[in-house]
Length: 163
Image 1 (cartoon, helix red, strand yellow):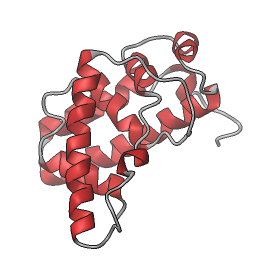
Image 2 (cartoon, helix red, strand yellow; image 1 turned 30 degrees about the vertical axis):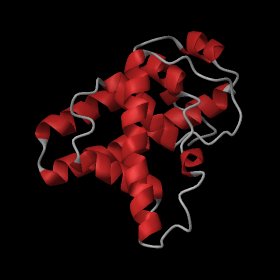
Image 3 (tube, one colour; image 1 turned 45 degrees about the vertical axis):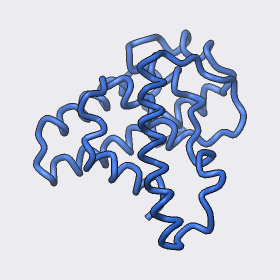
Image 4 (spheres, one colour; image 1 turned 90 degrees about the vertical axis):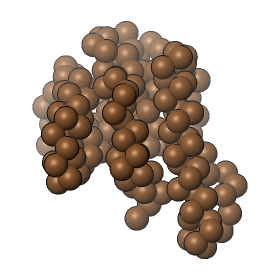
């Protein structure tokens, strides 16, 4: 199991997502699927910054346990595993902004944005399955709403290249 999977598991069982709006959930989770090393820094809203800080606390708890159990050699540079470069863009997308507007907020290529959002939907489907398995209907509906908030327009249009 990767650190990201362990962090998501920890977040599910700690009810991390319970009080977060769906746009913040998808924005913070984008840090686990966005892999580009360099990009313009996002603009942080207070909600996003608070969620990021809480996310990093959970992640550090997992990293500490991995280090203590000798799964990880040290806890140095663990934050680099999470890339918050598209947090603003994904937050705006989940809030209904048009693609042409969100792509102006970053220097990341359009294809990379699309790939990040589609990978994010895969993560949300997995989390929704977990919610169903543990029997948390409210959580399942919330994650379903998060998925719905990003599944629209050009990002999920049928493509000859994808299919």
